[in-house]
Length: 227
Image (cartoon, rainbow, N blue to C red):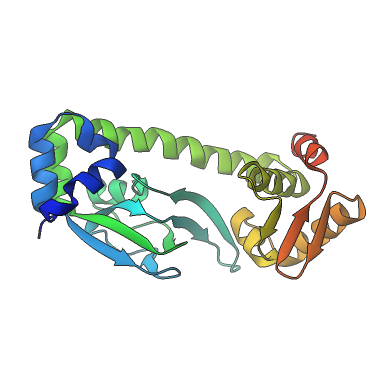
């Protein structure tokens, strides 16, 4: 189990901590980690599973979400290039079961680190500690924002924000479904359909099969912040 030497330069371009001049950590990483590929839609971890390894994403995106007893999903956060799932790291360090679900949003290539190695590196490398604690800070902020949205923001404001954020990524037309939006925001497909219909009547969007055309971005931006 190791990273082939011809892959070292490529991985250093994807993983920031490999450029921190910690030669000991780099040596440990390249000798003790391995590479893996996962397909879009493939489950990564189920709620209640034990965590035997930590993945750092090299290419692609993973989605971490909660599933309620009523079958509704809500996205907690996504894991992209150079990042790892902090819930997995927390489970490894605390030796507790995984408290959510994780799935591949896209095809993924990742560097895989065994759980016992994750713990030993914390004692040996300040660069690794900074990486893990930095993930904690970022993800904790993300999860707090999700909680605030669910508790304090009306669903029409949240959907307006979701649509506007997609547009800010350069997507004037979003390829999605009502169910996908519902799963992102932790609501039902029926609620999403009703609100999108209201937005369509206001000439903010145009809904077609599998696509939402964003027409009035200025109003969507304003609507997401209206109390």
